[in-house]
Image (cartoon, rainbow over all chains, first blue to last red; front, side):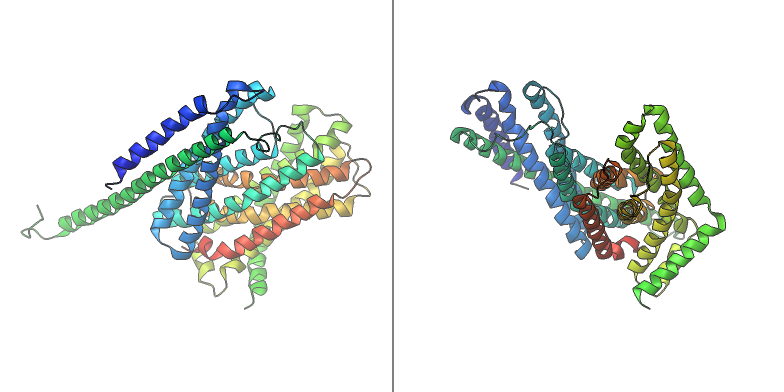
Length: 240
Length: 224
């Protein structure tokens, strides 16, 4: 717990420096100029969201094999953080695409896969909200989490197969093959910072989930006590 | 008792239940038919366009019909409180799941047997000569739909707003299946027709992956 304040300061500092580095340190891109700088937050948001979804999948499997509540808390926390990071990616992508590609969106393999991934985890979170009983919720959500994650490579392969058979305008390419060294360093730093931010939020969200669990238990205990008190014969202490 | 034998008993029970009322089958059939007719209102397609968009229409109709049809598969058990009895039986939970999958497959396949010829007549899409290959594609696609759908029906049966929850869980997961099934069907309806092996293999892989996953998780799925 003592780590919380220093960790907040460190992560906030990293994010601030990442913003500065993306805007002022990274060299100007030849064709896209300033617009390309969104790249330094677009790519990290993807790495953060895929990592979070992977953590959620591992936690779901671990929950099913161990039935320890802690894994379920981790699974839901990671899924939530992943959806947020994924949303940031889905918003920054079109912002970048419109001026560069001329369209907000294209049904390219990578974009489609991510969109489906986003929908899957939104459904996962909705499902959790609609199952009342905690044990059942954890179990069924974990089963869905496993199926959802297994689906991701299938979505990707199907889109790859589909788009190569019906060639669409080539949108990806160029990038990554010849990245300027400074650009690479800035990108690396941005990915690192956003990952740290993701982990930081994840830890906090996990703590919230465990507190919720504790609150539920206390509430239940309070209810049983008040029922006991009502049923107790008069004159017994605590029966007021 | 072997899993296959136990599954066939569950299948027989499901079929008997359905044959008593036939409500599931008739409702599914009419629903899918409405989707197919609505397509004409929405797009007013020429025969060439039908051949191009027809496979998509057919599979969308099957997916929607399936996501509605699968819901009672477990919800009915919970409503009648017969799920406990089924679970108490000395059979594996995979047998229960397998029996239900087989029954659902038969129901949806029966609907398709009527819907595909109707589609062919209404939109002037000739099916002669490709029937065997079309059945292969339809069977593989429907199998994948049913495997994932039956598992998710077991999940959504426990949630609130369960009728809405099932399509919500199922349709995004079926996105790759939809692409593969539509592309394979389209290749068959093209001139000259061809069986696109890549997509057929993809559909088969989808079925294998999901049936394996259901086998792995079935104990958690049906546990109370």
